[in-house]
Image 1 (cartoon, rainbow, N blue to C red):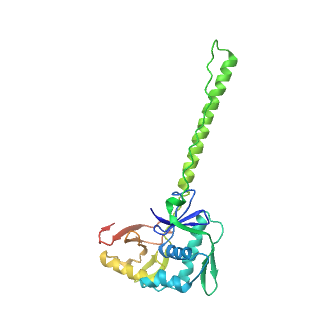
Image 2 (cartoon, rainbow, N blue to C red):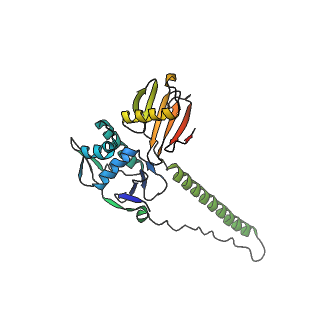
Image 3 (cartoon, rainbow, N blue to C red):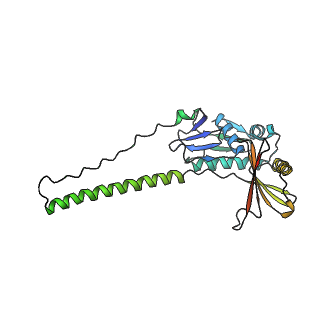
Length: 265
């Protein structure tokens, strides 16, 4: 059983998975927030309808981990929350900015287990196709036309059913739109340009240098490095590219680091 918050009766937020999803499409259509944004949303929902100061967010999300970030980093996390909520179907902006103070979550919020908020699946709809009436006696031209009409109707009904099922399957799969990790510029380490899923530049560079000790990376070649710090899987992923990802001819290799120091390239 997983803890969750139900926002405005329609959006489910799971702090454990850092995910947002519309309750009617669960588990399809999930949107994943990066770690700091998820923690900020958790605090705002826990204090719904109450002002939450910037100081509280800085202390509970970053400073208790020994990370110092700028106000801009906090606002980037709030922007990620708003973007994620909109992506899963929440039309209104529930995060109110309080100038020079902080933020306030203006939403109805319920906490509980995910299973408590998920509606039971609707009973499947069974289409009943009229049976083909077999002729009792001799077959006439009128009888053949009538029978062909029934056969045509049955085939057409079957094709429509298949098309609708295929469209639904495609939609459910296409609406599963987890956001890619949001990379923030983390400066340069020697001649490597570093981007990180963690918004703190100093902390990201520290992690990058620690990983370089475990797997040598020659920054003299002017690599572009993308660092993903995955706090849920107790490890980090480093993608080394010969140029930024948006370039068509980019070539990259990925290195996965686990806390037990096993590495998969």
